[in-house]
Image 1 (cartoon, helix red, strand yellow):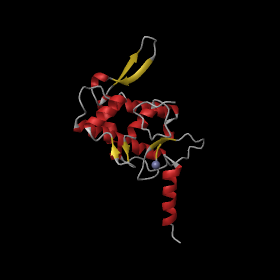
Image 2 (cartoon, helix red, strand yellow):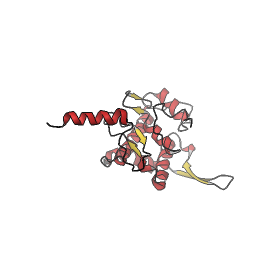
Image 3 (cartoon, protein in one colour):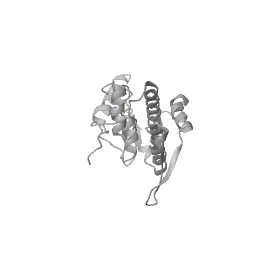
Image 4 (cartoon, helix red, strand yellow):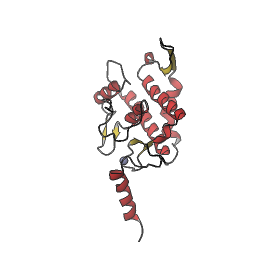
Length: 191
Ligand SMILES: [Zn+2]
């Protein structure tokens, strides 16, 4: 399967579409490489446009980027809970809740009679953040959501899709994060 251009080349455990969009959004921050595609307006515009989350003929302004990053970290907190970590703190969800309060979804009936619920593009850039929330909502209903997790390595926290039967995967990659953390714990274990 060829991945869309907006999916990181590092993505070894991709979620099914459209949840892949949420996963890739979370992974615009790469702790391993200390890079953040949503920090610089030009790179943010490039990524968000490719992902279909931005169609304005300008780059996002600082406030919009700040909001997008806050939504991203709110989702990451939810993915941490999915991997057995603590539940999100109230502050983690504040921006997600603000987006849910202010943006209105639009119901559309296409010519085939297919009914879709989406963000209203006329609502402007923040509507795309609502698009992500709608994808989360669908995934929570169809059962794929709890497989999308944040890596248990606190320096990594990469979003990965756990396809294991038991759904107990805790690392984005066993060879790197899994062993790194296990070795660290072994070293810390009192003798
Ligand atoms: Zn990791």
